Length: 191
Image 1: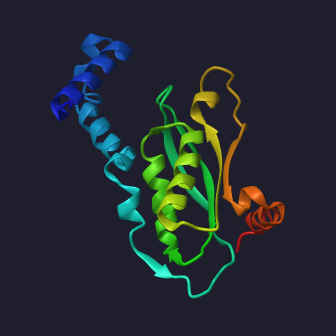
Image 2: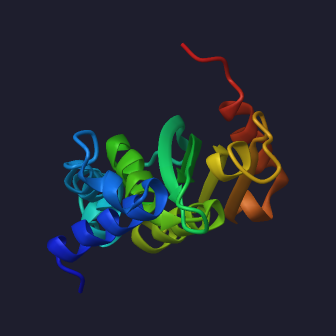
Image 3: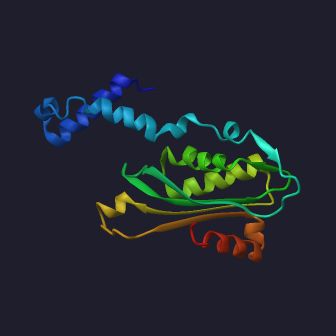
């Protein structure tokens, strides 16, 4: 594993590549390697999180068998291909059989996946996989909409493009009426 000091040196090397070797000693850049590594510790905190620990505290569903949906959960992640941010919102839902989970756990599950070097498809699939494995619901659904910095500031330079990914499991995959109800709930106006 790379040490913190080696990581600082790597950032310093990259700054030298961008600015020129002498520029890394100018006042505005002297502490940049430390600031970058500190920010990356927060941005990539998902590597220190484990879904089974996050979702281990569940509650009796007490017969509730409707859709549980947390929608419009904002997130930011980092594209593993260009190290550019992508950000958007996620909608995470499930239909419990026996157990429910606190709603903040759904947002934390998104953070677990988003705070890693990622692609949007993997985040979507990973959340759905974790819900299925840990809650064993009747159905699980994840829809993510995001704009990608790698498309906005380089390459095709499309500022308003939104990518949407979805993972539908169980009844959300098998039953069109369950999927339609989910979509109707997602499209409700905000409070």
